[in-house]
Image 1 (cartoon, helix red, strand yellow):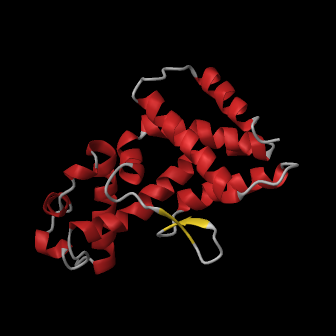
Image 2 (cartoon, rainbow, N blue to C red):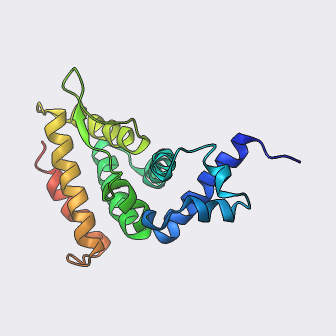
Length: 193
């Protein structure tokens, strides 16, 4: 039975996603992935122009993986503040448990840059599940506050704090237990009243 173009494309992407999780994005090779899918390397070029094209196709898959991880246990958070705390804790945990995916999304040459749209709203150069999820949670948090807070400033403040803390924890420069991290996150959120 001859494989359809779409099923080979999906198999290559699944194999690539698995390889990134195990070895990191730098180790990806269309030749090796084609071999793992038991097709010639020429077959992969029917679906992707080159390695960069293939990697750009993987970004939404890794982003979706990240969102599913962030959402795990979220239903237990009863308020916008609790959901931000949950988001921050899951973000930090993801940087440790899924380091290769984290690096690919945020530290590789494929990391997406932030930009503002025609309305001045912060976004990414491409739409991503993980960014939209974070944007929604931060907007809910802002809407729950008594004061008036600029979304872009609040997003960058919280994102910078959470991202920086993730790196510090992952590199064991700030080896804090979970409850200390949770308290630190709560204290940062106290800035917003």
